[in-house]
Length: 39
View 1 (cartoon, one colour):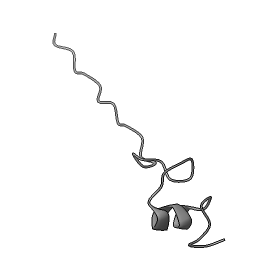
View 2 (cartoon, helix red, strand yellow):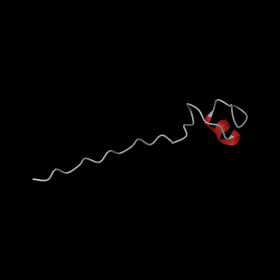
View 3 (cartoon, helix red, strand yellow):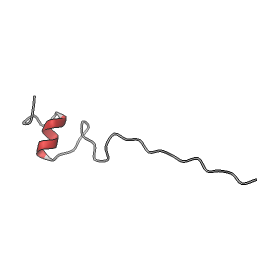
View 4 (cartoon, one colour):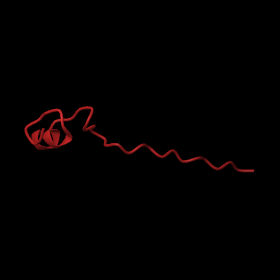
């Protein structure tokens, strides 16, 4: 397992492919801002 392995993160990084171990948008989750209510 290393640079030549398609299934690992490092291998996907070298080959420039995406998948379960290397998602396109990254692993960050969206932060939803709570709207302030006017009184």
